[in-house]
Length: 211
Picture: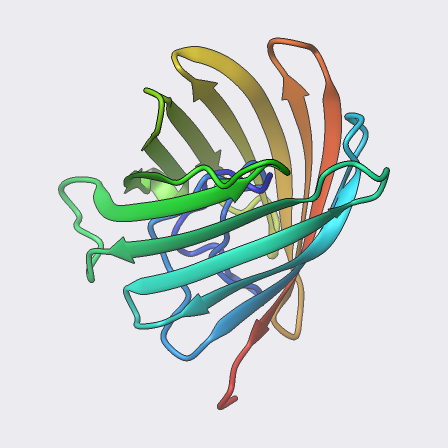
């Protein structure tokens, strides 16, 4: 489902720091008492789905997230719950670190996982690594990158995913930050094992209780 690597400073003109479309989590979190409302759409790979998502700041360093994607073809729904706890300051000399926990639902069972986020930001770009471990000796890596802004409100990115040592997907994407705290992310996920190609979009709105 949703996953990728997003950098600090993604919001040059509206929008907020966001995860990648293939699920990679950034070091940054939604600030306390703020929420990022999302609407997802997936298609093109034989598993079309749509649904809402939410990321909420419990503190400035602890974020809860969740989404529920309704299958559009009568298949099983998909969902994901997550927590992220990050160090309070971004260090200059070494990667910024965070702990993450996730529980994706594949239509049959929840799959609890835990892991680590490491992020560096050279030359106004961003490079993020997620390392995750789960039951039954499962492990996975997510590597995500964002370019510097190529326009006032446009940034390009890409994610690579591995599971148990095999590369599974590549997801190039674009993030467009608009006025009014609205952002739109568009991506194309290419399966490296089966060649399946799917598209994804995420419309996001930052909700500020005290604007």
